[in-house]
Length: 409
Image (cartoon, rainbow, N blue to C red; front, side):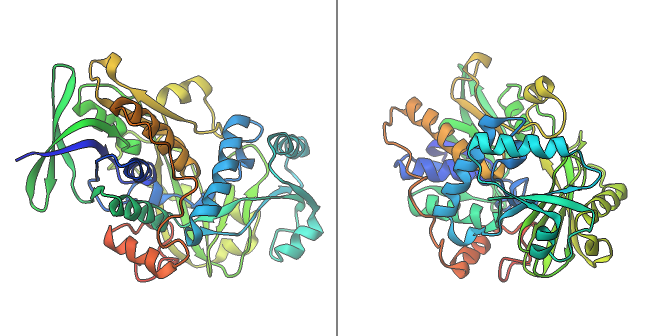
């Protein structure tokens, strides 16, 4: 017998579980599935930066404002899913001072609080900061613990009636009369058929593959990036290199480790792509230009993530450092009227992506309940042990925060 659901969400990263939570809080019947544990894709394989918007201030002011607004919301609702660290954009002597000034002015125009300090003051805050750093700029960056964030969203969705099903890969879809009629899953060693009213494709970098099952095209241009966690204690702020975005320009603090990132290399096969030594070497060397001790620090773990970049946006803008805006695609014009895809975006803006998608789904279902996720605390937000239990419940541990989530390494 088939399982009926108002909304089937495919993809258990931050965006997918964010949509599930949003819809469940509106009393809409939701089922979410993922082929692996939750946050197994991009969300759990990032460097874990909670953007202030400063990285995109000059290239995409609108996107920067979204980051700033969502940064503030997540600090309010997500508790121990966020680590309050601040961020420091640093300029070495060989870096273009005009770029620093452009970013400072752009941040001020957007409304991002900034505080410019000289190199000596910066080294007081970060004693191991390179001697070549001439000045720096404080911004309200922070660190996300993505495994906790994703699992807490899933737990709240479940508590409000959603069915959350990790390890349930979609194997096929049937389309008739312009609608997806059934979706078939592998689950618990067997097969399950779901009859959805609406299907939301939130499969990240795999969104194109999921869309193809319904006979529609979503053009993705995924790129891989390496992250290396190394031993280094007591770094307080996120360090960003204040130059045009390039390889190895961010250092993200954990407790007794820091995460070094990253690269950007196109990939063709999402499940079998090259992981090149030069990416590790370049990232370490470039990050050491900001924080020299990391060059010889012991490596704890290394992983690659794949960015879910949307082909039309990338083709239009081109280049690295363009804000990864998000897109909600309706497929009625493609001949499948009950299918929606959400692509692009950043971990920081997952909640806004979810709200936009949930608004559209609610309109389609004739539900006029407003979004509640910006004002409603995540369950367990103040209790790290509860959050970490959610991670175990949903098999949600990713490499980004394996050292921060108790009992999940």
